[in-house]
Length: 246
Image (tube, rainbow, N blue to C red; front, top):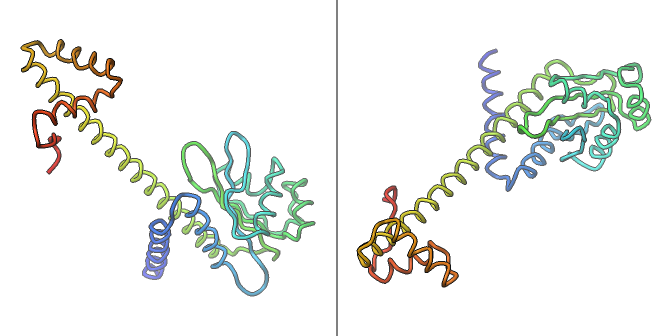
């Protein structure tokens, strides 16, 4: 039994990793995930529709959906302050509405959803980022839909999707920081070398050399780094290298 659970988890994890690698951005990943989830939930007995809602500054909006009907149903819920998916997001818990015809926890939403053919709703929190709350919302035309086993599987996929997304964002942020650091180091190296050249040419202190370089930069309206690189090029045919370059 444990081997089956581990195998299922590994399959879901591999799928999320593939989606991350193939997605161009966060929106496309969420879209692919929503469509994947809807496809897996499709089957005989009735339709199910999936969407992801973002809740930012108390305003709810549908981020992605598995199709036009899913978007319509999700936007319907977003027009109400209270509903199963809003509750799932705000309380950070799984919410299941077994049959909206008799479930009166959200009376205003209940009437509107039933009129649109919705019978069951499943809402799950989706840990997207620190600035916004999000939720995976699944709508069904079948009463008492979503078995405990189905809910557990959806929770696993949602959790793995959130983990994959956070990891991808973290890695992208790290690469950007490393790029910025490299650029800053390269700029600093060129300027320091230029200051050294000026000190040697003018037999002056470091502070005086820096001022000479700054005045020349302002007078010629050229960036300090560009002017420093021009000076280095005039005395050396080898471009300057930072200490961490191989």
